[in-house]
Amino acid sequence: MSKNNRLTFFIFLALVLGVALGYYLNVKTFSVYNERIAGSELRIKAIGGQLLKVIDSNSTAYSTLIAEKKSNENIRKDNEVLREKNLEPLTLLSDIFLRLIKMIVAPLVFTTLVVGVAKVGDINAVGRIGGKTMLWFLSASLLSLILGMIMVNIFKPGEAMNLPLPPSNIDTGIQKVALSLKDFISHIFPKSMVEAMATNEILQIVVFSLFFGVATAAIGEKGQLIITFFDSVAHVILKVTGYVMNFAPFAVFGAMAAIVAKQGLGVISTYALFIGEFYFTMLILWALLILIGFIVLKKRVFNLMNRMKQPVMLAFSTASSEAAYPKTMMQLERFGCKDKIVSFVLPLGYSFNLDGSMLYMTFASLFIAQAYGIHLSFDQQITMLLILMLTSKGIAGVPRASLVVIAGTIATFNIPEAGLALLIGIDPLLDMGRSATNVIGNSLATAVVSKWEGELTQAQD
Image (cartoon, rainbow, N blue to C red; front, side, top):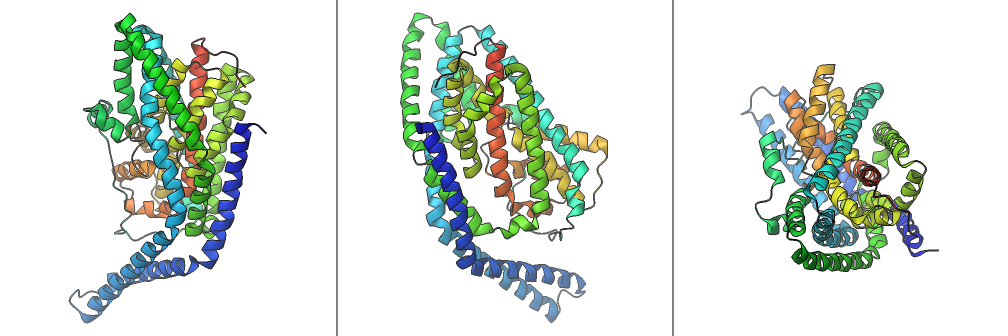
């Protein structure tokens, strides 16, 4: 078994063992906390209904209900804290791994992109590659959004599931973000490269790297020293990546055990319809993207998908596209994509080409509208799609980025933000699929742009 296949095997094994341990812990240890949390949530909801019937807010009955509600909120909060504390040994494994990945990603993007752009040399060539890249990104994003809109209208999970609606005043913990065009453009340009590196703002790092790379090429022979230095640094970081990847199975084990121990498998049965329809829609997106890739790459697209098994599994099990970034980069270069194309297209993809996230945004937004019985006309749905197209760009580094964008968008259409509470419980399960899809989308984009540029060579073992 080769080293790559061995790591893939151990990641898969860790995933299975993590689910098994998580289920055992959920039944034996965490069921107490989960029952208390569920019981207090039901009581809070019931009290909310009783409060609406009380006419006099100064009455003893009203005060008693308020006190009981506060008591149940405290019970819920205390048990959530205890549950999280008991999960710490498991979440620590994935937290360490993701921190190590974040440590690598920013310098890796910077060094490889500077070298790639400097090797391209001509500013016109950079513009040409950039134009082709953005054409794919915008087309793939539009495809993902439209597919999500079509499938959620066909399935209508919000109507079919008949879920009890959360109270209108519930705190989802999601801060809505509605980026205007001015905010979006301002966000692209860094005010400090150090700050962009520290906060892993990939889009801002890309912008600075483009300027730096073009300037390096422009100074001629002196720039060769910088190219050689940065190329060496990039290889050192890739070596560090190899060390970090050895920790991946432990991270996958911890992440899967934690999510199953916390959520249990019961949440899957409750939301089976929504989860099943969403993942089915995502498989259709995979098929469409691979079909388009086949038109350009021919049979080599299957070799590419085979090489992406490890990055996809890593992204799926850790629910993080960033976790798969270094491996995706290495596999694309081994597939035959030139380093200058990979280092240019892939970082841009992490801000502009999150296909899985785009699909989820329309699917989830319209699901919430359906759950509340809010009918959106075709024109309104198209408007929502275009708003999501804009607001979703450049905030990939925001925690729960998809939910944040959804919160800002649905408010525009008078859809209650409390509806996000319907999704928060299963969001980690859905995020796994979104992250894996993002890796597929970006790897195909890089390979296709390489082919368009005539820079796709023979694959390496």
